[in-house]
Image (tube, rainbow, N blue to C red; front, side, top):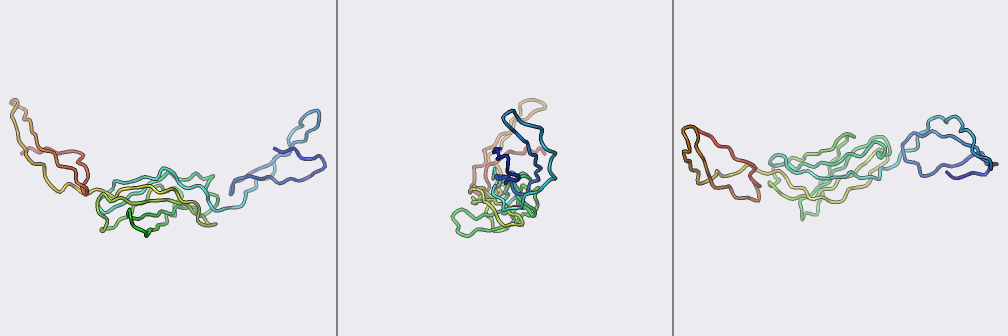
Length: 194
């Protein structure tokens, strides 16, 4: 801290964080050394301010058909800068000029799910997440690309064949389902015996 002239009886402390409680002590010093600190002052909270730190790790994807799942890393309490803190989620289909805006009023939230039957499976969206509190809207994250949910496979595997390999085992084989822009990649198959 800055050393203040011995005849000065007050000082302004700067570069504090908004909406944080602080207590202060004063220490006297001279050419011999530094004395004992004063007793702490009463706790004092700085004034609120618009939040300036945007959420990080904007990602998402997955979910069901007709869903856009958006996730983020929540902003810590000491960076919320005031009461009434929440998140602003903005998204638009890639190539669109119009943003859709949603407000998530919960401080603890880290996910938003947009459901709409018109969403095409595996469609790319531009997404950004911002913050607000009672003082106003703050910073938005940079844009992330997130894909809407996949659809279920629309076709059955072809070329299924079975070969008896022992008295208790049969080897079943089939041709893979090709990747499809709307249904996505196949994560697994289920073999049923009847």
